[in-house]
Image (tube, rainbow, N blue to C red; front, side, top):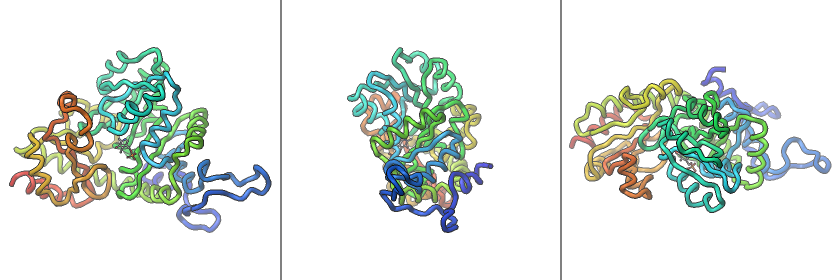
Length: 378
Ligand SMILES: *Cc1c(COP(=O)(O)O)cnc(C)c1O
């Protein structure tokens, strides 16, 4: 099955009971048992629900893994994955991971003895340097937010394997339409499905795919024990969103390319961050490991004042957190998603006050270019 077909026919399609072409929303918490312990595959909806199960089968197929799991948010998914580890274990992570991931590791899970170190995984030598005797996993986000840095998944997973570490990849930005980390050696792939997979700014969800029956058993045990599951209504919305993932990602890609070309030529723009640009330090790796470069772009307009002027005039880009939806969004990382990082650390990472991040939506690309143009120049 090719990718676009898999989005429609992967997992479980339709309802064998009625012939309905979509999986129904099984809005149910418990299931009749014909005798004690004698049930038709489902006993209680925290443990398993048919609509959620259909979504879990679908993401498993899309990521070429062994088993899929759906959670109430990306953060719930990440937390459940971390619950596979024990007190005293150490996880090595990409330094500019999603802010919420940094927060849960450094302010919540640390209290339970799960240690973490943040390194620039786009530089492979820094991975090996920071492995400790108690390191159990390498956690990669690629591309990153907001600087779109790229880590070579296959090479990083190779290093991890050599040291018997699990490789975990947050695949939110690329989606399985462009990038399937299991095929490159990753053990666990996870998503904030709130973003591109859902695609319509109407659902908060997280997904995980593991690549072995043992890990599937362990993660199901954590999912059922801690209970941060996705409800049937939201599972159904995600299945619906995923059906159009292919055409959405293709369109995001085309429009983003146009916008990047425009930004690169604009005198008010100091620098453009996008893995599709040939001068991007890891452009070749991005090209090798992903079918597309995605719809996220950051660019530097030089100062906070210039960024504010742009925000004031822009019409089609909504000032909001989040990304990956049909509507274009704009944000200023230094004062929004990355505000909790001290200014000096932000400067070290390269997140200046004039850095603007956009998530290119599905509006007409010419309207988007004209909109940025009028907002930048006047
Ligand atoms: C949004 C996001 C998360 C967190 O997901 P939620 O659904 O908001 O809990 C994790 N990783 C990345 C890359 C994200 O963009």
